[in-house]
Length: 139
Image (cartoon, rainbow, N blue to C red; front, top):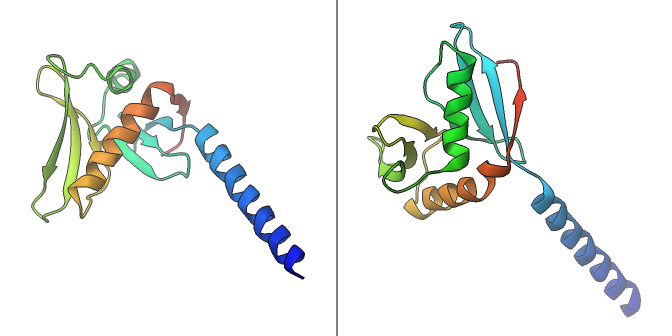
């Protein structure tokens, strides 16, 4: 009976490790789509399907929307561009990615209660956006 319980615990533990490995192999993806306003937009999705970031604006040309994606993928942080974490009017923490000219290229799709959570979202995007594929999607 002890062996059965131990064997079951080991099996659950191995399944958990396998799930973690699969999750680490999963990648973010950029969905590029044309909105109801006939403008091109994009959203960055986590492996679980949650929207992590949006462009926050529409683009008349698909090439301009793709350029916004490329800026976030390249993440030329420093003199060229910067991630900012800030508190909004609802006292929630958000982040935005600004190009060197000050234009917001990407923004968090949700507010976070803790500043550390917004900072973790930025780190996840820094780690995963460069490898994210771009797929065509419907609104």
